Image 1: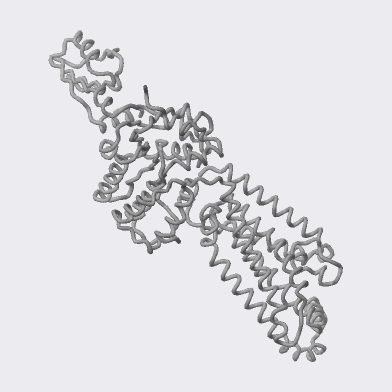
Image 2 (image 1 turned 30 degrees about the vertical axis):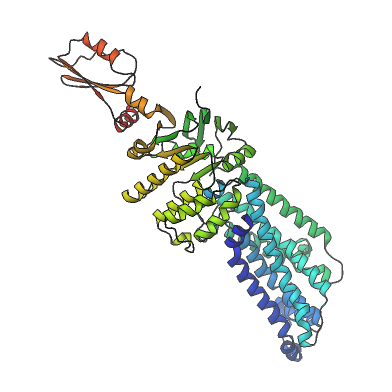
Length: 255
Length: 299
């Protein structure tokens, strides 16, 4: 029944996130023919400056469908929206997303705090898994509708990268929620961390292959240098560490 | 043989940010008692309950429920499996309906009483399909009580069960509680600052003040032991203090010396006779008077 409670507490965040990501993924696939019609205009764009370079790079990638999907979807939307919803799913009092007093009712149940936290984290991670894999898998499913194909394996690898990297932000939000207990502070702090990391990756481009958003985009896999196993392992270890920290926090906390 | 103790705390201390909420609280609650835990706001009642249920950790001292250490995380789960609890604010999950709240809670308790669930749903007239957040405070209290009573618990811990309720609803809740306990073998430990309701349903009482127990015992025995002795003298009452055991408080007011005793009147009356009062009047005291005198004596 704890699963059911966690689901009720997070279902709207999850469903809204899933709806937006599914719409976004579908839109990107279905608008590809329209984008291709604009490709002849690309050479007329001034390519000076950073913005111009980015446009030219994007245009180059979009000459083939695989590059288009990566640059428009895996590199952009889930990195931003997926991160936001990962943080949203992890934020809020882990014992009750209602009030602190409702948390007392939860604590009066014969369930250990570890179990309560594990169920809350498990539910959130399952929802994050759905948020990252369902829209990703929609791409190979919808592609035939526009006469294109996209590999199921690629979608799964990119989904894995999105999930594992997203889980870092989810775990950070859970950890912060065991410290603050409300919804807004963990949400804002975790978002702030995400923005700082994102900016750092933009500013330190030479080091960006060590960044969480680089991992999330699955760029190394896209550029055929392989699945970023080391990065995935580090990210997973980071998530586990933060969830462990959250368990310690919740065990020590007075209510 | 004395009843086994369901709750026992020894020199329990709890500090929050340097402020001592409990200052060596020692308490014994025997099996089968309806135990009123009386104290002013901020006296340490809720903190004690939270420690007993593993919601807060004591700074030092010992707390045992059913003989199990409340400070142990594993034992605390066992304690909660055998305990019904109603918190002061009766906050439940606002996003659930009454029916969902019951279906969520029941599976945690192997001895869940479906028969009582049906009975209290009927008696309390709880609307199954209404969201908890749409319930009035009174209805929320009734739902919280249903969820606690149906657990098949050996111990019921209620934190200010009637706080925020109107007199009619308070009476309804207390009557339901008394009727329930009459039919079940259980111990009730309830905190309150409402002396009348403790007087109405408790058979044992402890008064807590500033994190310490200042009075504890059976209610009838307390009523028997506590006496107010009023001595009237020809001139001003003598300033010399009485030394008889059990004096809680002495008050001089002109020719009148009033003494509150926790050990009957006889030793004090015997000592006071030597002071040649013109009259000696011994009167029983109410729980309210005991409460007010003991907690204000500390001021």
